[in-house]
Length: 386
Image 1 (cartoon, rainbow, N blue to C red):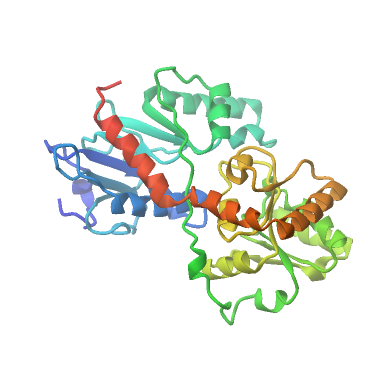
Image 2 (spheres, rainbow, N blue to C red):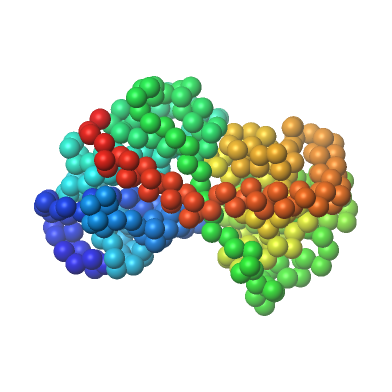
């Protein structure tokens, strides 16, 4: 089998063979949706894992195999091997691996018995908070995840909050390692474009100070609570960027009309990377009142630009913001306006706060995250079967 070459037909199923190289299988199938958080995890973590690929204890390089969506063979270069995902792969992928890493808890691609040690990353149990899910459906999802946990040789959690929730709702054996490995981000303020592309819908909107949110426009993001802030801060505008196909986006626009602030609200839909970077760099503050997050990647991205971040104190967000973020304790308009007013004043008076924020954000870099994972892979590969 040639490295970096798409394999088709039966030959795409990895053959069993004796190989002195330690072998790692990584489920990166969620590359199919690069607009999602999991898609970004697969892309950036995969790149960094390849870059940091170590030799084993006996000097042989690790053999990396990535499960990728159709047409994505080669995405991580030609020094690794690829298997393209399709429905049959959920039933059977031949090959022998030391470690099989599912990058998220909902993966449908699991090793067969004796095929390799399963390492499972759990980012959230946010479905427990969904009002549109029945208790029976939540129980089924928990049972499915428990079966995967029972097969795993190592778990990781995307945040301390997630670790606590998992231990509360699922049975984690005391002998099963369960460290926290935070998500990384790939934003580099030094590469921020000086100006937006000419066709950007943001250009005409940013002549006055603006507040910024980025993420899918969905009820769990709770962004309708930000509209009254435009009443309290008449000199500011608000940019809510992100996929807006959910009916909730229409509700936001209607509410803005009723409040008389629609002329200071911009919802450009999904934005490209240069536009996002420009908005981070030029906003007065980043607002993220989300109700449910597995990590909260946009918060870390905004922090690396040294911007004041105003976030909810729910789920995993305090794990990201730490002591450097400003927190909405509730979502009453007067309370949120006071938090924003006092926070902007404090940030402007405290020169060290920006420095501390940038330093904290640096701890969520992909090189650090990949380094942590390589330590776990090496430890797991060297252990006897669980």
